[in-house]
Length: 153
Image 1 (cartoon, rainbow, N blue to C red):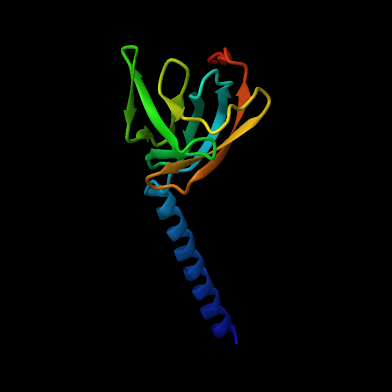
Image 2: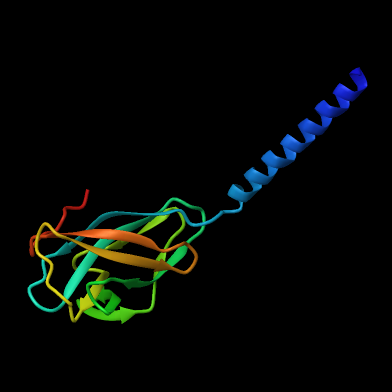
């Protein structure tokens, strides 16, 4: 009986050790991107175009790329970079491992063309962010006053 208990204890210890080793090697290899969105907003549009701003934080050890944005507000939603005060459409933005992608006024942003309606201050606009690796993230952009520009901390 003692021999059987000792053998069973050995098997349990070995199985537990292998399970824990498997868990730690997964997280040690970088794992998946771990994305979350903060600081999202849209200034109230004054024409049939609008911009969206947000920060995608990645606490994972693997980078990712924002590849597109979709929204019921417009069938024409693109991502733009701003360099030397010139705006141009891009196919993706990097979301670095243990870093963030900052879409902000005067910089990179989401562009909504041919709005189906003009959202008013206090409303929310739903968007879905699509990534190369991570699952899509749905975000509600609160519509702020036209001049809203949160201060950097």
